[in-house]
Amino acid sequence: MMNDLTCIIIGGGYVGLAALKAIKEKTKGMANGRRIRFVLIDKEPGHLRKFRLFRPTTVEEEIMIPWKDLVLDGFEFVQGTVTTVDSGEKLLRYTDAQGNDAQIHYDLLVVAVGSSVRRPEPYQGGIALIDPQAAADIRNRWRANLRKAAHETNPEERKRLTSIAIVGAGISGIETSAELALAMKKEATALGLNSSDTSVYLLNSQERLLPEVSEKFRRKLVQELSKCGVTVLNNRKVLREEAGVVLFSNGDSLPVGICIWMIGLIPNPALPAMGLPLTSDGRVLVDGSYRVKGAPSVYSIGDCARIVDPKTGEEDQMTCFEGSFQALRLAKIVMADLEGRPAPIHQSSKPNMDNAFNIGLGQEGVFWIRKWGLDMVMTGKLPGKIKKFVEDKTSMLR
Image 1: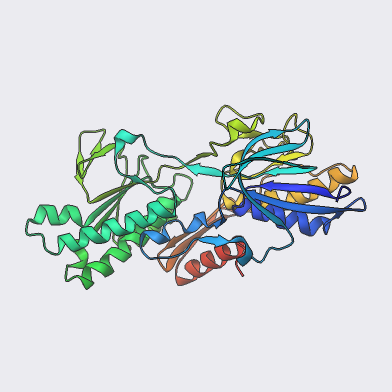
Image 2: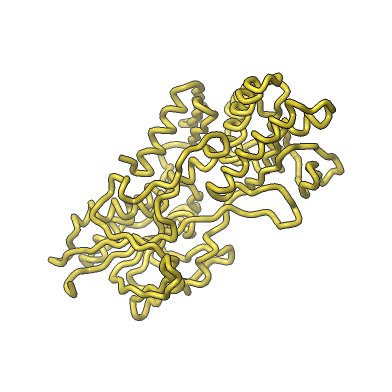
């Protein structure tokens, strides 16, 4: 209908879904007497649970959820890759799933395309954990290596086949290392190998793990990782993996069966082509109310936007925690803009706590919160359960 307002969300990741849900609930699907039609556009056929990307490295788990299996409804889905945003004409141009060029008009547009996994250079070898297919490849490779090791008579080669190196010691690297170490021990036992012979090395280029956490939490985390079978090596800058050997900048080397790269995130590489104003590192430029500069009725939140608290100058981190708060505030901003009222301004989502982390280690986890200068650390099954509950809720699973 011509009288409908069309609100398009680009990106069906955690933040895109949160924005869709929040705007739908805040507006109740109406604005100034006009019905709002919601359209979600994403290049994938379903919601990819990026938090769970490490799971298929150890078990066959489907982490691509069809849109119809989410608790969200009342929106149209378009599978396609956005090519350009024409903010003057309010037109979105995209390539559909069949490779055809198409376009769609919008009245409101939310850019929430998130980030992509940083890939190593081709000459650096190894395998980057970038998608479910890479995860499945890793699973097949380490299992094949363990089967080979069960028949290998050379102890050095057996040690290499039962070792994995993970380059990058952020939260994803930590969680992946624990998941793999536990799964390898189990598989080794089933194959008649000694489970203590399997090794997972977490290679950290910095002097210590997670510089932003307390020493108490870091010690506990390293201790729990060690229980899983993970060895943390700090101050190790990896140059490349070559013929089953990881080479370090200090001249050391480490023979491994697989080298997995997990070296952080970069803003979505599709952004430059869209024609929106970007920062020097490739994120969307927005004002204090998430409005894209020079593009009326276009907003951006999540990993793909540079979001700064105007009062403190503090920049939001690229995490789902921040993205969820941004989505709730965005709904209020959109409503205010539609009604011509002053809109809320962004403020840091962690004003009531200094810091908090919940890291999954297999079925268990380590939870840490620092508040009023107090360090509170909890380990065991409860943090693991809380993490899974939060992830399922964020993915809006039925």
